[in-house]
Image (cartoon, rainbow, N blue to C red; front, side, top):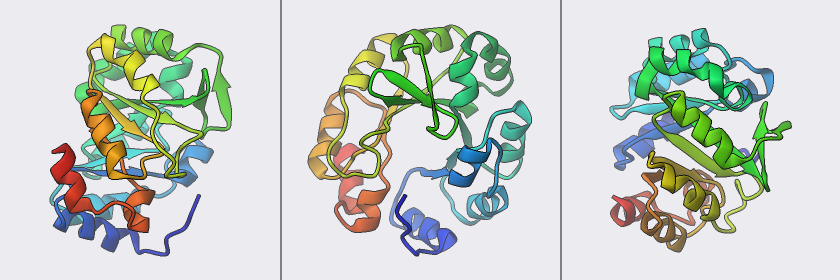
Length: 212
């Protein structure tokens, strides 16, 4: 984790003012704790910006999703609960529909769970297929080893998920405009960019032109 020193609310406003179509927020404290730790701040952000907010990092129970949606979040990302029990996720998808996104965070051949502190023994595609049967509408795929490194993206995971026919957002390792073009041309629905924007390696306006 790298601290940027930026005020989260002002940063969110800046991204929205510059044309970001979505804001992707992760409650890092919540990911470790297994519950939201910064939900009030996220709610402030959701109310302050004219673009939809996607939030992950602390949803392990259905009431966690309810709490985020009540504060203006448009989509909630769930990882651990979905990966560890995909067959029981049907109740979640029936209740929340496309307001849910499942995060498939890969560390090599394994899927990382519980704030990336644990790993699932079941492989990426097997879990994804089970979740598709359960009604999941969208995935986020992150290569954990690349996340925050700016060293390039993993397109293998996207290639393995694409045949399922569900939209996939790609994250982890995005560090250049070439990465954006590769993800776009590989058929992803979208790309999540974080550190590259904060460091200036990628300018938001040009990124939007490339992938929009």
